[in-house]
Amino acid sequence: MEGGQAATLAALSSALLVGLSRAMILFIVTSGLSFVLGVLRVPNVAHGSLYMIGAFVAYSICTFFGGGSIGFWLALIIAPLVVALVSLVAERSLFCHLYQREHLMLLLFTFALMLILGDLTKIVWGADYRSIMPPAVLQGSVSIFGSPFPKYNLFLLVIGPLVAIGLWLFSTKTKIGKIARAAAVDMEMVGAIGINVSWVFAFAFVLGCLLAGLGGALVAPTISVTIGMDHNIIIEAFLIVTIGGLGNMWGALVGSLIFGITQSFGVLLLPQFAIVFPYLAVVIVLTLKPTGMLKSVW
Amino acid sequence: MFSEMFRQKGFGISIGIFVILLFAPSFLSRFYIYFLAVIFVTALLAMSLNLCVGHGMLFQFHHGAFYGVGAYTAGLLLAKTAVPWWMAFMAGPLAAAFAGLLIGMFCIRLNRLYFGMLQISLGSLLWAIAFRWYSLTGGDDGIHGIPIPDFIASTTGSYYFVLIILAICLILLYLILKSPFGSTLQAIRDNPERCAAVGIHVRRHQLKAIVIATFFGGVAGVLFVVVEGSIFPDLLFWVLSLEVFIMCLLGGWFTFAGPILGAAIIVSLRIFVGSIHNIGPLENVGEYWTLILGIILILLIFFLPEGIMGYNYRKLFHSRSKYATESGTE
Image (tube, rainbow over all chains, first blue to last red; front, side):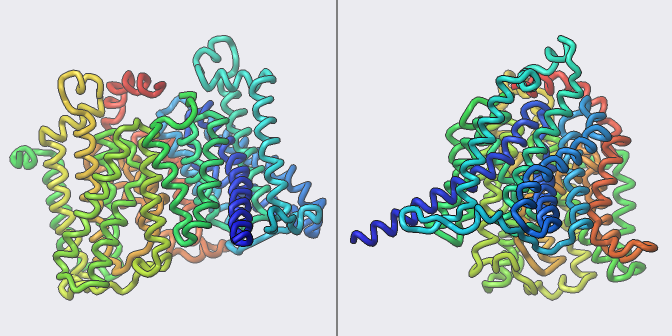
């Protein structure tokens, strides 16, 4: 009896931790999406592609440095920057000319961008499955309630809150963060007091994409990096943003936690249909609170 | 009602195209007949979606789910039971309409983007079931070699079947749009507040539109089974839904026939670019047809934002712009 309870406790706590670490990745990606959604009012469909590119760039950097620890830490810094550069080029060359257009056209543009980036990724990296090792410090696992838990996931549990705090400090304490928040509430007013709205948009877009790249780089050691990972993440990210409240960063956090934890407990309950549980959670949340858990900026 | 249809400018052209298509199998090779049939199926799907998107301003983001429900219902009944073929074919659209009613009842309370998101979520549930329930649906492999009744099993047979069903569905869709119900739906699109004020039950009308659209989406699903003889979970995946959405925007979403054109363009691109192997030094160009689709989309957005057939778009858009800004900032 004692043993059985301990095993259940171990399974539950391990599921909880796995869910939480998954939620951290989701949060980092989703907060970027939410940021873009809040300021630009555009669901950026290409967000998942940028996440995928982040993972592939991280892979390339890691293999360039021979798979060692230095490669991984460098990848964690360089991959988001590369993604940010890609998004900056796309934004300044094409996207910025469309802001006056109807919103569905912007959605259409990001969809086109997703198609293009997806195929460019395939041209550059090919369709093979790739994987990278976490740095030596984060390899192996620690024992929590008697069940092994990967150290890398613990690292994710640390990084997630750090990103959340960083974003919060950035948006409440810095001038550009305050401008971005103001732009999310009332774009016209921001323009009226003499701020270059187009650059605010560009900045928000690039910052959002940078977070997508960071998420991609962070997720690379935990999954196999391949074509098609963009399709899976983007739909999850959209649903998380929706249940959290459009454009609300804390909403992204709440939504990610719901999504990650229902998924990992779903694996415990019904492994074959684990994929169903997060979607069910979304349905329940939206049925009870049609505009998401927290206040949306729209 | 019919007399009005006969007087339409496009009516003569449509009849002409229909007659040409009737004789197409006599001068086209088998591949092109199959290709046309695929276009017809996709066109019907896009047309049904446009009832919601273009004429109802409902962001039906996951229309593919109902296409898949229609295809899976008909396909599973044909492959796993002894139900006569015509019953299986009827069951597909009815199941799709039922799914549309259920999902619509959940979604209809929400506005615009939230509506679309909840729909993606619910549709993804259906996708996950089709994807994971190996014993029933064959999981990610799907089911291949579904027994199709003999008279439509050949390429030409399925072509005629699809063509005739498409023609009937288009006439029905046209009549629905010209009926008082269709006019009300478009009035709701243009000004929901005023419609509610004059006593129209806005939500109920929109729900009816969703059920009708999903019914025709289910018909398209059944036609898919007839043409391809197989079903697989990608039919219910959201990427397909978004592609169909793009077809509506591309062809001109405030026009009646626009989605057909959009479907034809995207399907042609996929099949023709997909079949190119080498252009000069470039190898395997066909693998990258989505890249080419993306570039064409961007060109369209910049140079032809009204969609190819959307000549009246600007006029409509201006009459709508007040409403768009009002509800865009909710």
